[in-house]
Length: 245
Picture (cartoon, helix red, strand yellow):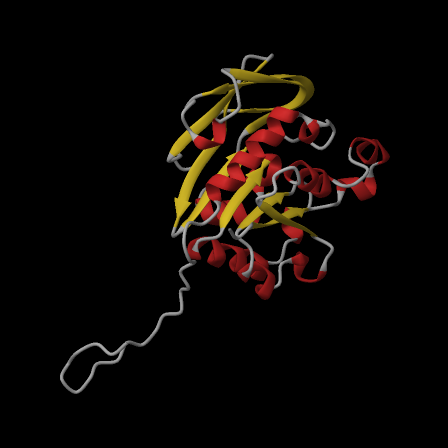
């Protein structure tokens, strides 16, 4: 059985600039996420960052990627448009995309959603309770009725996204706000899942429930069967007017 080829993309800027955040994620957020995936033998895992040549996503690597995980925050504008177009093309062909936390405002996610993807927020380190909306969904497997994150950044509605195909989780925060925290879409042949938790100041990606959801999501967005390649062929007809293969 072939392994699911996963690339965890991390902006890797906060970790370079802030000693406080380095204490939370000394290995980098992207590597912490990758470590949480490593317990699943079905995955072949690599990482990439903004600072890598071509942001670590050259065409040949993306063509051999089944699932791309995206975490970004303060350097969205530094992502080259050519890379955004490259990722969009691969999603349309069938590559799965898992967007985490502040990646909602990334060029990649906004391009695929076609909306502002805006929201309200408050950085107060308050409790978040994530309720399971669809307990039968594969991404929710292993999660009870709800789970709590002790300290997180608040994201609240309205969330400027297209209506999700499915909503798997809804969050409640101590300030009273709610938020669609686990949403899925299909674009072309690719599946997309957005998962809200993961502010850089808190060890959210070390929490077992969060790691379980991310692993489940990788399995769910992974392509089924071969990828479709949008090559725009010029189809020829035989002298008899029959399509030639």
